[in-house]
Image (cartoon, rainbow, N blue to C red; front, side, top):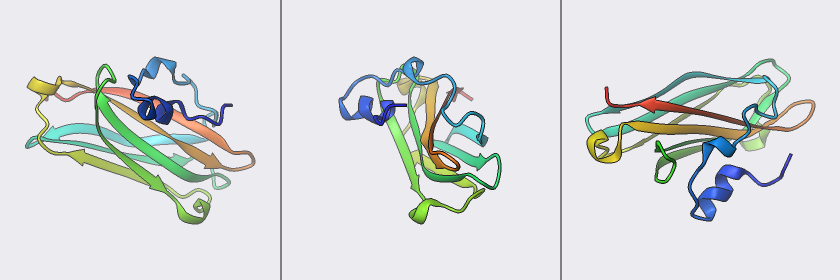
Length: 138
C-alpha cells in the first residue's frame, strides 16, 4: 500500500480525478460499509450524504472524505472531510455531508461522480476507496 492517497495527489497536481485508477477493492477488505449514500439536486443545490460503518467493534474510522465531481472527474464541485480527533471509537459510525449552491444539471451535466476515501484503524491500519456515479437529472 502506498502512503500517497491517489485522490489527493490528483487534486493537488490539478489532474483529472480518474476513478478507474482507484483500487477496485479497498485495502480494508470488507471491514467497512457505506450506507445511505445519496447525491441529489434540490432547488439548484447539489447535495451529497453518506454514512460509513465499520463491520465490527474492533475497527475505528480515523478520517473520511466525500468528493463530488463531474462525471468525467475534471471538475470538483464540493467535498467534505471528517477527521475523528483521537482516532475515533471502535465501531463508531461516521457521517459525511456536503453541498454546493448554483448547480444546474443542464449546464454542469447530469452525471456526478462521488468518491469516498479514508483510513481506518483496527488490528492493522487500512485505506478505503469507494466510487459511484449518480444521475442527478431527476
